[in-house]
Image (cartoon, rainbow, N blue to C red; front, side, top):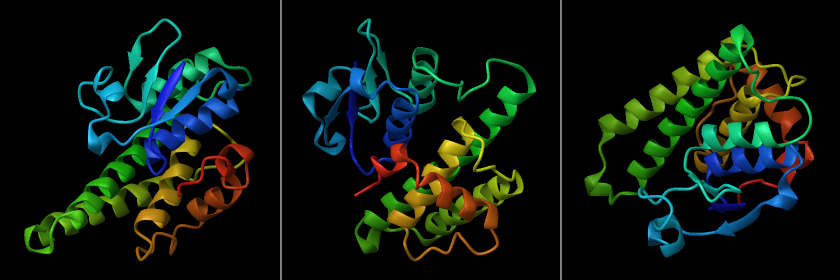
Length: 198
């Protein structure tokens, strides 16, 4: 398998963590690309030129982090990170979706800040940051358990660390002790240590 990645991407990090937790890291060639430079090998497999992009064992390109992670979950060893059915699956998917939503808001906010100052929209910046905080409040209310490793807790942990990395002046910790505890616990795991954003 080949995983096209960019180091700072939280969506890539999630996939890399899951690959390590499922014992698949030695089966995956990780290929660093810059999607903003339209890397030809990435364009050939993903029409929207985004990371992560995985080329599966059978040659099928997979281009969305929840899909890639679910694929890894079915291939790898150890407990399932995404329950197969029922209320548990919906609970985990809900937390994963909330964390992905927080990341999407954070990425939009970051991209807006990268525009020339005279082109930035204060109203969009406010909207993205407020939406991010509402997503984090919902994650906090879900009380993620650091002792339960699943797709929801992994994505929530990735989200808060990425927010600290890309929006260092944004105080996401105050009033969210469950997310702080989750980050502290998960960032000590070898899979998280090996994939820290730089």
